[in-house]
Length: 323
Image 1 (cartoon, rainbow, N blue to C red):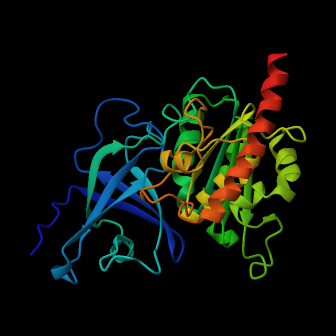
Image 2 (cartoon, one colour; image 1 turned 180 degrees about the vertical axis):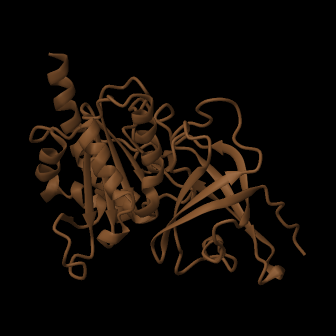
C-alpha cells in the first residue's frame, strides 16, 4: 500500500457557490511562515487527501492556486471546481467534495510558482495589465488585486482589466467582490457567460473569456478597457492568462496579429520568434504540453503569417513612440 499523507491542516470552512464550485478555506496546524505577507500573489500550494473509501488507491495531491491574499495569515482560500471527467482514477476534487467543515487534510505550506507580477510583467512596468481568467483561473488574479487593495485602500487600478469567463452566471465566483473592487479602485471588470442560450437571465457580455480578442470584437474590448481604437498592442498592454488549455491557446493565437509575443519556449521556437523579442503574454499551466497543436503544420504556418502581420503592427507603434 502506498504511503499515506500525514494530515497537517483543517478545512475550517467550505463555501459552496454552486454544487460543483466551492471555496475551500484551509488553516494549517502550524500557521503560515514568517511575518506579514508570506507568499507572492500568483503562487500555488499543494493540497492532498487520502482515499479512505478506497484505501488501495492511496493518496492524491494536486497543485492549487492560492485565491486569498498573502497578507491574510489566519487561513488560505482555494477556489476549486469539481472535475466531472477526471483523467485520474483517484481525482482530488472527488475527495474534496466528500469532506465538510472541520475535516482534516494535507497542505504543503511552501508556496511556489513563477506566475507572479514580478516574474512576468514586472512590478514597475507601466503598461496596462490584462488578466484573463476562465473559471477558477480567477484565483491568482484575485490574490493579486486583493493584496494591492489591502496594502493601499486608495490604490488606483485603472490600468488593470479583469476578464472572467464562465459557462453560467452562477459560476462567476467572487462576482460581487469583483464589482466592489472595480468601484473602489477603478479596475475594469469584464465578466462574460458562454451559455447564454440556457442562462437567458444574464444581460452582460456573452461568449468565452478569450472571445474578447476575436478580431471582430477588438473594438469592443478596447472601448471597455479604455484604450483608443487600435490601441491594443504590446506597447500599451501585457496579458496574463489562467484557465483551460483551450482558453490559453486561443488567447495566444488571437493576440498574434497585434504583435503580442508569448512567453512559452516551445511556441516561440515553433513560430521562429526572435530571441530578442521580449514576451508580452504569460500563462499559468501545470501541464507542460503547449496549448497549441504545434504538430499541425498548416496551423503553425498560418500562425507564422499572423505573427508576421503582428510584428508589422507592433513596429508601427514602436516607431511612433520613438518619434
